[in-house]
Figure (cartoon, rainbow, N blue to C red):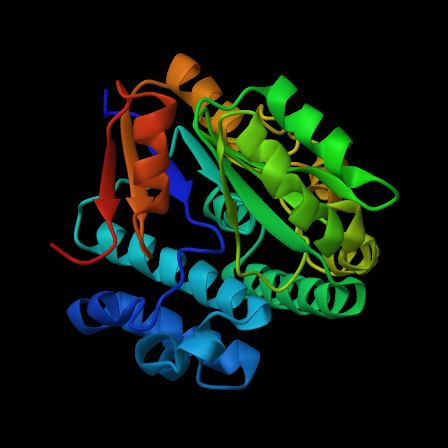
Length: 305
């Protein structure tokens, strides 16, 4: 029996100038994936990924499309080289990466997925510019109770919620700029480290409501199929069921609710032994898994070997 393959798909934050360039140069299949993306979007995404400028690559709307395409290009190249099989035991993705995971599980085609993440990025960028807001990383031996105490204490009449459960050592909180500023002293009072993040807005918080409402229509506009393998839900921390209506509902909720990545990885480590692979770009998920479950080793393919 062939080994079980688990694919971990990067999310926003993994983007960088030069992403996908090595794979595109090493693999005609990867290069063709970028060419296909350029045709779908109507501009040269490949040039932006490979050459920058950094300000363009890090924009929410561009970054989400760029990461999705780079990950798919890498997976296709690895398959073409015989380094990955065709069947996955499970796929998972961090925030934006959940869309890549669903595509790899056969839920929708490449171009439909690209249109979805492009729209998602635009909707989130617009909501960020409209509502403002910020995010703060809380690092240390973080407990759910400590995070909730900080959010409750700093919120006041504003918005402040846990946004990303990245690992047992890091949770990101998100909300109004004033509440984020007030949270820093409370985080430090808990013996934890506070790191204000340079982000466009308060992602995975109620301030993204406009983006979530618009995403609902976008998800209804593409053609869906039942996933062929286990796909993890960021919202629940557990696998999606096979019902497409449920998957779409959870993707809408994902924009305004917490991303339970640590819980996703804990579930996978407990239930799906096998070979874990993080495709390009970056090494974020490989690093997070070391903090979530040291026994689960992740094979990273940020660049061709």
